[in-house]
Amino acid sequence: MNLINIFNNNLKRSMNKRLVFLVTILFPIIVVILGILANYISKPSFNIGILNDYKNEQLLSESEKRIYDNTIIALKNTQGINVEIADLKTVKTDIITGKYSAVIHFNKSDFKLYSVKDKNTNDILKYLIERYKKDSTPIDISELEENTLGILQRIIAFIILFLMITSTVTASMIIKDKNSGTFTRVLYSPQNIKGYVLGNMLYNFTITYFQYLVSISIIKLFKVDIGMDYIDLVCLGILVSALATSFGTFVSSLFNKEMYANLFSTCIALIVSLIGGSFIPIEKMPTMLQNISIISPIRWFISFVTYVEERKGSFFNMGYIFILIAMTLVLSLLAMKFTQRSKYLSHNN
Image (cartoon, rainbow, N blue to C red; front, side):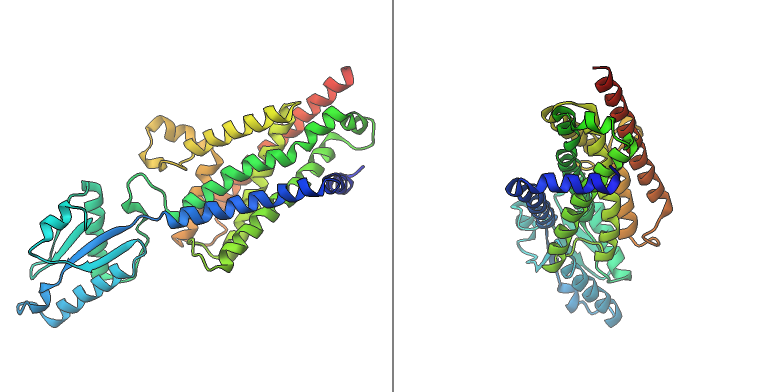
């Protein structure tokens, strides 16, 4: 029994229960799509009021007025910011009642920002205006919402978290083999443990990557811009699926009951997601958690997609890729080791 035979055998076993297999395939796809849409829709939104009396200011040159006009246009084109013309007479009331998150008053000296928001948000708004005065190219404003990741980072973190859990369900065929006696027959076949584990991982990877690929393809088909090119997402999916697959196989090698494996994988996935910066950015965590977070693959995926999103270089940043491949290999080797241990336990029993 070689690696391909194990793959084919797992596929045939799954197809014997076609309805269950169909649900197993489609359910993660639906959840991932809904998760992406939910994160996309939940972008931060700020209502900005503009006092445009600068247009009547005679001390301003035409070039200065043009800079202010371009700044306002850039604000209007920034996703997550709604711009309206404010009334100077009611501006303070509008801010207090929450009609505007902030009001910008351009004048002959520079501009004034009226807001009841926290200092961090005000500082970022000021930075945004200063930047648009020099370069009117719209930028991502996700950072305006304190303690929140960008859209792309949240989506990738969610996908990895969910696929780590669902890949354990797919990898549970190892547990079924242990309980059905199939694993014992493998022990006495020419197939070694490494080939057996790799065959299961190949099957798991194929299912996981298929789910990932279909999900992002549907999202791109509906032209939902999540901040990353389709080709880059396709390439990233290889790393995501490999990591999720090795994690699921490792967890399944530890247990003899599917329920225990699924519960354990959910707990561990949530923990590595938490310390990896899925809910709170790494830089806002306590120093101790920041140091611990280096063991979380989600941290490195978030850093990787941030690097790609900011276009600091090629997608193939070998530093991040090396770290993620190393984590995948470690989990795969651990899966083989614990499956080998199950072999000796089964042989002794």
